[in-house]
Length: 300
Image 1 (cartoon, rainbow, N blue to C red):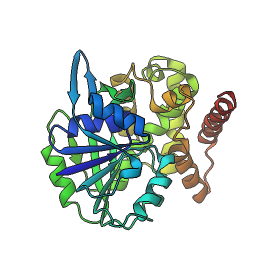
Image 2: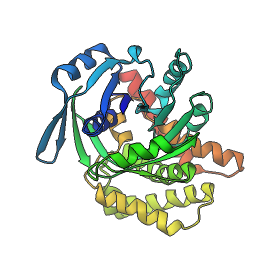
Image 3: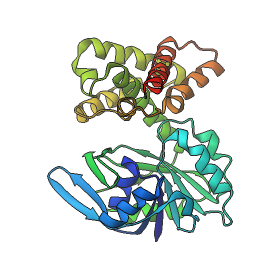
């Protein structure tokens, strides 16, 4: 099976490194320079003290034709619009597309795609991109995938071929799957980004932990969550298991990049507004992150 991966950030590089052990992979990059580096050096994967090199093909995104059996879209949510426009202008519509974005704001965009089978995924791995061809696998987890539209046969075949070292688990309900990840992201990402702390500090510092619990209660109210204690314990467990990790939103703020705040908190605020529910904590965090983006935009 030929697999295309659009996006050569930390997640794109991580997926390309592991998937290329089983399938023929082409990774599509934003720049021709990065594609040339990957073609010359391969993708260097650092996992603990072990370093491996994966040989993949790399091309700039302008050369993507959508001919692979499966294409994985591993760009940030705010980069999706241009990718979707490109998909809809291809001469041959791709049959199988897997979208790996944080939050749930991108779901409304996927309804505009005419592809036969559309899948969504939720990534639990931690990865840090060192340079254009080197990535650190610094948080081992799994990837959950589900059908958004169409048939899931190829997705199931793809999932079962990958090893236990990089598990991909098929889920029946895409909305529940993404909502579970959204809850975690909505708590950990904005708090760590504003406080500028690693994940573990949210539970190790008793004052930050109180903020975490208050924020979780507001999210539970908006989402009408059942089994609230289970969700809270999952957040606590993730904070402990990734104690030394810096969240993707914190890393985006530190690198003067746009964040995925609209896909995460923006989605929740829209949901709150539709239910005529107040969400003062979410609203405050949303504006604080948008303010950080604006401040760093002026300084860069």
